[in-house]
Length: 258
Image (cartoon, rainbow, N blue to C red; front, top):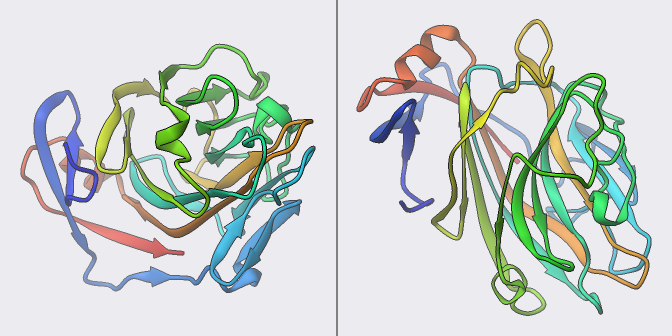
């Protein structure tokens, strides 16, 4: 399955897909160059339309979240370009994060990817240090987003995740209630993984959460962990989510392009 298509895997039907089209009411957009729309924590920076979670230096970590909470409970489709450069050795990596703690949420660094200690969260991690992999992690209101067993994890050679300085990887994450898919450069990496944002308490009573990123480098050096070209499309109403489970049904969307 190609990540650059407009198809989203439907609930409980692996071969079924749904086309997502723009809502008639319009498309909400924001620019990565607009720092005011982002909460930048610790070592994260936003410059020249690139969001960097760390510089290329040891013991650096950071998080960044859109200040305005986003609808996530009924489903979403997120994509971004991952850029890792400048480090020797390579850094630990970064993660796309859905969480219901605060826009200022910040965990511990190193192999924790800036996540350790963040609760009520689900994260899709891209590890580029030792044992490189793409993984999904979850932490409830009393649990920790720690460097322990993941919900799902797939090894990915570092020569794919970080082939050379400035070489980019396109990542896409789709979610319908209960199921998540992760794509890397158009290829499905994790398919129909059982993920429940509700059980993780990752959204509030309105179905909204803070959406953003975390990243970290280890004690011996690391990369400038950055993203660009971020888009986030949510399905804000229960009616739209029900339609998403039917193959071929076109539903409206609201897009936030970053």
